[in-house]
Image 1 (cartoon, one colour):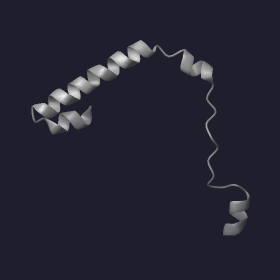
Image 2: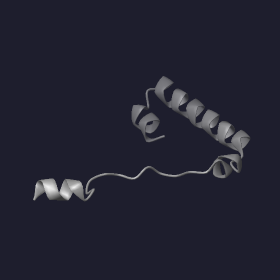
Image 3: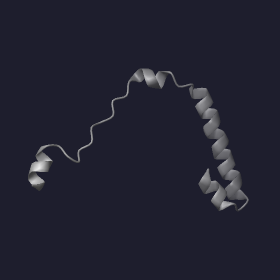
Image 4: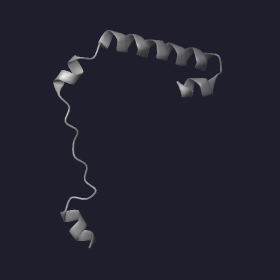
Length: 57
């Protein structure tokens, strides 16, 4: 039965199809700004010894 289920394709994941249009609609400057702020917050938390807060971010 295990062989039959493999032949039917159970357990196989289909690749996600993303279009380039979705990536083009992202405002990358806002994303970069948000990532930078998060990195800065994580650094400050780690520097001051607040490891849990840094992991949470």
